[in-house]
Length: 594
Image (cartoon, rainbow, N blue to C red; front, side, top):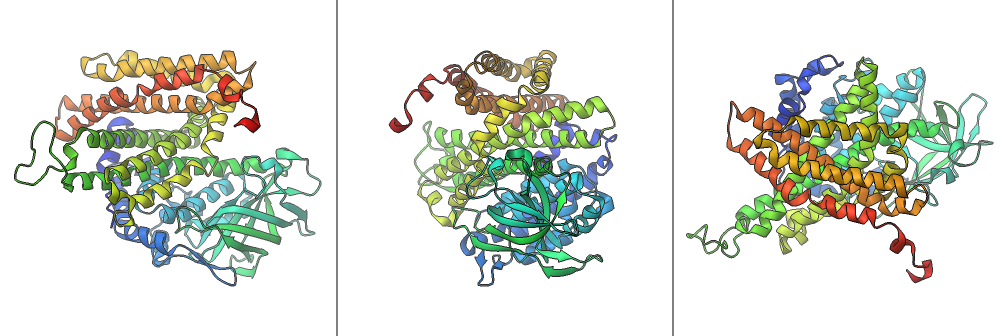
């Protein structure tokens, strides 16, 4: 069975040394993230992931979810008991408001717990993740009555939540959706239509499922401007909060898919189902984007989480598998061969994954902290800066981390050779599970288009200019000899990103295909720079700590960071060349010649 240990030491290093999160006592809820309290929370989250969820990962993959004749769906053996423990432990409400039964802790705390649970069992973690996202949309756009009716039960885990966007004929272009909403006399709506690819749309883990559904009210404008958001419970709810009659929503079928078998991917049929408008008519995307942005941070974390667990298993195998001799002479002369970890190419693979994981984890916590600041700071300018950061970085985080998370799962699988291809060691499941993160919550190509088409030019480029200024200031302030291996390569990579940004500004307006052809490479260039910045910040924390403390673990961080700067960050030059090549060869061939 695959192994997993939550990276508690790495988390502590980021919280304490890199981001000084404990120092943000001015933010609501941050008084509970310091020292022993934080360690106790993360320690229990680690225990739950390692002891309860890891053993169920392969069970869920093998058994999958089963749709019954009556349309109900049963989850794999052990999932119900594990979800009960998750709910009873208060994990779904970790960052939910206290007035609805939550603990009010920062999102940055939930982000860590999400990583642990996803590494341990990605399919299982999705039930909670979707519920948390649905709660977020209700809390921002729901009426007082809707919040009071649904959120406390979702916080407690008695009910779960979903998001219903996609239809068979439209995915990203939601303006094409056909699900319709007809007004009822009592102010509710009758929702009719079919949604596909609905994760956790039907299951047996909770007494009720709260669906958030995009639909078009009769007479609404065409396109995205006529889309509204509705809350549609599986079971209607009485005024006292008890469950009433079954609503007109059902699971028509389950998708037979590549991975995440423990999470049902449903075709959902709405047959005049009773729903209630969330927010304003024809403003449904505002509410859904709250949920989607929450989900995109979670999906980016899935890329990191699968990369982490794949790395841990590849590393364990490389330390034990005997094959050949080290190029510089036998390392284990008492054995018939050396462990494969002595071979440079195996070490290249392992270090590539480890260097990504450390910086990607920093990236996710940095962004989650920005979300907390945007929602909890009393300083308007600080809130604006944090909000700018979120808007700019969310597509980068989602796409870059999932692309490289999948690549790292494959890379780890390669370390095991043939043993990585068979099910026994678990690597092939990690590869299959990681693949979906590149697709859902907005396929990565769409994230790249969103970055260059919307996020870069927003507010006159305020967010990207702030990022350039922040990294430039960091480089200028850290000129000590120990920091040269980090700030030098980072400055070069930043210049590549600035040059690519300037090229897009000059060449995309008159020839939009230039932007479309460059989008993915630009996003990856951006991602490499962000991770380089994260490594530079981690290196500074190590250097500052080394003045009073020198340990093998601290020294190892600097070595891994140098590996990133020397062997991974130079890819920015390649990405810049691709951006500047334009769209000519990409678009020249006629469609029928492709």
